[in-house]
Length: 481
Image (cartoon, rainbow, N blue to C red; front, side, top):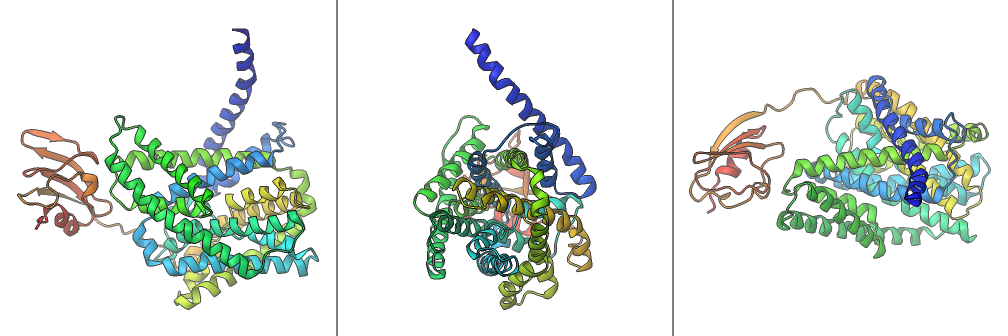
């Protein structure tokens, strides 16, 4: 009994602090909605206030732990983002999105390295590392701001930003790892050709395993009969975690694989879809809060005066020069209009990924790694505060805000005829149009509330809410022949 109570006395204060910090962070999201401030900044501020130089006085200086937690968090954030991404929109912008997430990252990295080396008279290798770290954009921060002010961007802008933010993380991570390894070993950075080949192999393997993994997940969810509904979301999380680890161990990009798998899985039939998506959304929120609070704890605000000038210079250069040029070089060949390019350039917010990546050089003993971390933190906060606060106004100025006209959702009643293609098939497997919802199913004298595993039968009368009446009737009423 004594040892158990002693153990409890050790763990309970930590649990109390963690619980209070999460509760405070969740409470602060109301400020995010009211004032249009990205929740990311509020979570970071919570950690900083609780840290050793804040009112909480909590001493925390473990970049190794932050890196480990950050990798797991980023993996699940990418998977949740993939699940929530419309595959049709991604297919429409696949080519420009891939160029923006590769060539765009390379251009941004090179320009930042040039400013660090020639403008600030610092080693070029450090500049490449810094440029790689801050080259990744954060869709979560962008769409958090847009949702808080009820804005949606026109045309392909939304899809391009989603595509870029999901696929440029692996590129930034690869470049950061290569630059860190070169600085830690004291050798020259790899040649451009060597980096390009390594990136092609890692991205190619990640893409391939992501597609195969997403299809395998879809099959498993549909065909493995789990007794408890609540276990399906846990099942998907375990599959995603296994895919990420297996891809990484095989030399591919686990981050790209898990993002692509999420897109593939989300675009295919899925039993208990609502429960699975809700679970991963909640998991993503918990992961983000935990990670950002940890990052805030890791920061020492007293270091900021020493890096403020350089941080402002790098942040301003990224916003005004590097990001617009990277977008222009990447998207002009695809004839993307100037207004769309300007908006895509402005929504290139830096968020979680750069700060997490900035912890990696510290774990490897790279010289000036702490200074680079402080500058990256300063750049991210400046970027999110400036661009995040002005994003709605810029969107309206460029006239790229989607109208509020929503598709009319019509109730329909469809009888499953003899020989219908859906006869004997599960609801999750019939391929209804996006947004279509079967609310009730009349079967003889019984009224069923259908789930994804509910099987259609001849004579069923389905009550459906849909914005695509023609497509819904074609699916449910179509002949098997």
